[in-house]
Image 1: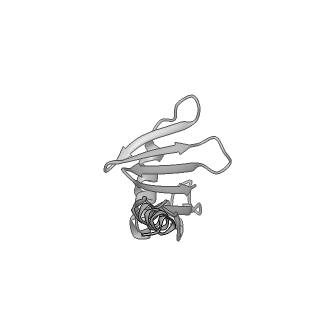
Image 2 (image 1 turned 30 degrees about the vertical axis):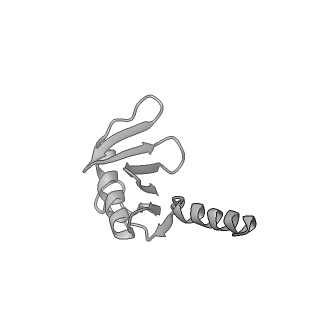
Image 3 (image 1 turned 45 degrees about the horizontal axis):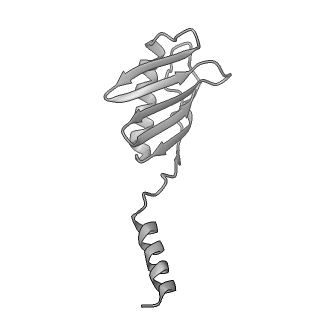
Length: 112
């Protein structure tokens, strides 16, 4: 077998075996999850899901965020809670709070 063909086949095999980089997919926002509270009218937006479906991502954002609201932030404005095995971290310093939930290779991000 010619050497260039061996190199080409090796490169194709390595590319096929290499883990693909997870592309975050955009999910629909959770509209008005806190109706009847002081947060009424504020959506959970910009939900991004990696290695998880949108249905699960929206559920994690909704339920994980509810638990994070009850959490106490540290001096840097970071709140950390656990919800059903998901590690939820919220950064409360920017104008819109940013959250990320992780569980193994799965990741969900959203904004409040």
